[in-house]
Image 1 (cartoon, rainbow, N blue to C red):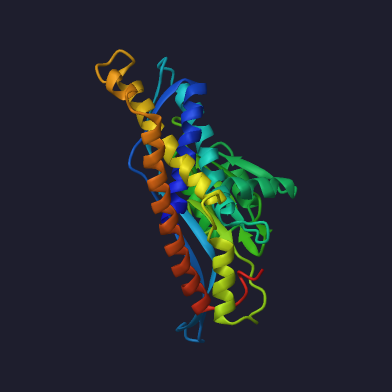
Image 2 (tube, rainbow, N blue to C red):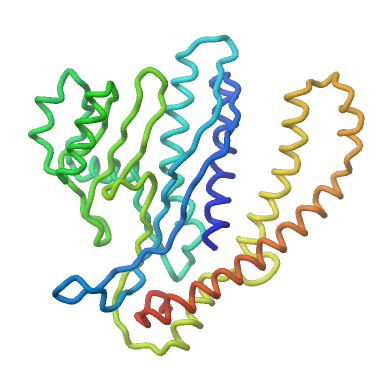
Length: 313
């Protein structure tokens, strides 16, 4: 479950990046990147700080490393900066959007927070958004009503030549209190899209209400909601389409690298579409089984920790 969420995140991001690169007219190639999608716990402690119990509180996505090689086709650096800024905003938005898409159902809604969503919520609530540089750091910093750790991080980034976008104060959204902020390099367009807690990603929040159901009820409801059913479920369609696009994308990438007149072209064009679909069906089936197994384990763990009705229908 955690692995597939991260896999789908990178697939959607790469699909958007390919589209952006064609519009902006740059060549882009992803290098090995890293993201962590994890389960979060609330820890209850004794007076001396010793852990007493814990409960499941939601998920977190932390994209620690997302890098690539970007070159403008006409050699203009401003094209690279435009691509990086656009890709960065989309990458941040996907950090809350992908889990929301995967875990929400018609009877169970999941909400996420990412840097761009936190800034959007702050703007919708009438909270001022500041863009901080070396020119206005001393003027804006005293106005910020946010965590001192974040203030220190902003100060260090600006003094190093970066610019920072941040809301004047925290937002409160679905019991999450914090802020989103973006640290960007004006020379390259590269940036870090952060939320409170220094997470370079997003938080997915589950509401905690009653604790009136048994372990069996909790597990059954969790499985019914989170495990897609049947070969034509949304998840199955998404994974099938994903793998078909990956296969076709491999062919397209080969043509892009070697050109239409390369000696490999006749062999590439012999690949029947049916074999691509068949290979994708096998991969989709394996992904579906992995999802079911992972979700089953996650439901057992979370319901065993706390039988509160996170999954109550």
